Length: 104
Image (cartoon, rainbow, N blue to C red):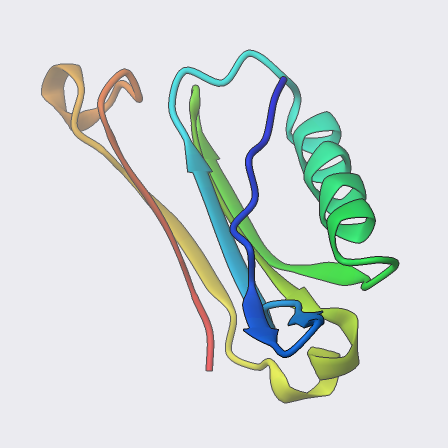
């Protein structure tokens, strides 16, 4: 698994890590837990120890979306909802469809 992270906001010689990060993939062949851990470790290394918590994650077969928020903002996240829509055979099979995560 490889991961390329955005540079974040630069202010002078300091890179400010993003407050909210969203990741999505299709045809993922890694478990949800391993995927989440790999991304959190990569973010922590990239942004020098900044910790991120999972605000929401949703999977539909190999389709996956996850939203991470800096841990210092944990108390500001509420009304988290995750859902999927299956559009495969007869609307019953998850071979096609969508995943979503929302929060306020």
